[in-house]
Amino acid sequence: MPPFPSPLVAMRGICKSFSGIPANVDVDLTLGRGEILGLLGENGAGKTTLMNILFGAYRADAGTIAVEGRPLTIARSADALAAGIGMVHQHFHLAPRLSVLDNLLVGLPGRGGRLDRTGGLDGLARIERQFSLALDPDRPVSTLVIGEQQRLEIVKALLRGARILILDEPTAVLTPAEVDGLFAALRAMAAQGLGIIFISHKLNEVRALTHRCLVLRHGRVAGEIEAPADTSAAAMARLMCGQEIVPPVRPPATKGDVVLALDGISTAGHAGMPLRRASLSVRAGEIVGIAGVSGNGQTALAGVIAGMITPSEGGVTVRGETIKRFTPNAMMARRVGRIPEDRMTDGLVTSLPLADSLVLPRIGTSAFSRGGLLKPGAILAFAQEQIRAFDIRCPGPMVRAGALSGGNLQKALLARELALDPAVLVAAQPTRGLDIGATRFVHEKFLALRARGCGLVVISEDLEELLTLSDRIAVLYEGKIAGVLDASEATVARIGLLMSGVREAA
Image 1 (tube, helix red, strand yellow):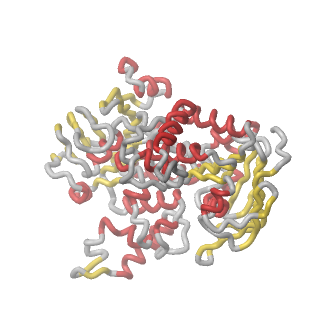
Image 2 (cartoon, rainbow, N blue to C red; image 1 turned 90 degrees about the vertical axis):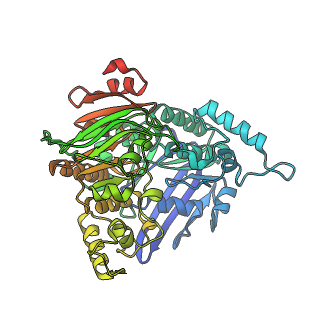
Image 3 (cartoon, rainbow, N blue to C red; image 1 turned 180 degrees about the vertical axis):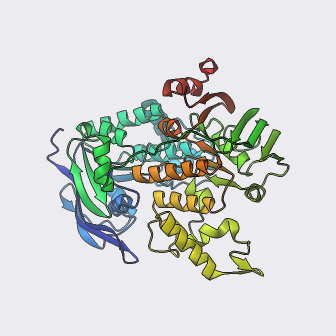
């Protein structure tokens, strides 16, 4: 590891609590000039809180911050930006009704009293050339799929050229080629003396990119890793979690009848790539993985199965019944569960207490209401049981759902959907941004559902995840099913060919 004698950032004795629950306890962090520092820990370990303090989104209860040796009070994000600190957040901060270009120009100095659109276009083109982060400047952000929205957040940070760059799970929605381009850019920036803090649960990426790692556990520093490239992912996981993490084993499938069938489905009039005469079947006790580069019809597929999108052509049957009216309620009535791709926007109502979000799909049932009046005691008891059963780490059931970490939000979504005892479950990017322990938890829940006879559709850009879980893997390419592989014959190479449109691989 090269020496980094001149610290860009020194955070000392940082403490932060929320409602009496400690998030950071006496945390020290230093970032050297030209250093790429990995920041590791389980979901809820305090990583994002610490970085939000550095970026000015939160104020520390105690501790000091120095930038380039100068003590600095960071009371708001504007102070951080002025000090040359930029942050790409895990959850997006975009204006959906504005265009890509308008989002890029927010906060940038104009020219002659007007937005510098020419400068913005030039910057966007330059970043596309350098990092292969292509975006249409005129598209409304509301029409971008989640991968494109993440790309926009990364472009915003790169366009501003901060000397200190914080990246919170920046590769969670990128393809391998885009990850390679981002890493090349980060290495070039570090070579020019910038300091980068890289938060990721993808330990192999951390090993490949970072010079040093700081590990948090339960808000405290658990240790440092001085040579990540020479440290195994298993050893990193042990330091993060305090125990050995063993991947779950997928037992042989006991398949039953077809519980979900899509026959020649096409979609039109919705954002993103439409489906084009896609056919797929799922049996009880089977996990069907869906692979494909982001934006090839995954959103439309999940939307049709969940009743969010009405097909323009073709038919869908659930447990032998042909679906004539596509609504979320109609699908829930047929025991179809849904884990959406964007848990912050489409999953839980983040402005409500967690307890309310957990019961929303069943709020009108006799379990939680009577004569149009809610049963607060039943709602609270249900939420407390789910928090216990799914190890949702939070101050309590009345905490605002949006205050939970990404992993705990995903556990809450799982708790809510599994309470419906689904016969079919469609899960889109179910472990995106989750740590290794939370990922194992999700996988175990999916395998338990499979053992109970549920048919699962798991949409993921993580091929290792699909190979771990799936009995069959279908590949989407330009809205079509390019091929379906049994688990016994599926490899990363064969799936990759299908993802590129090479149908002969099947």
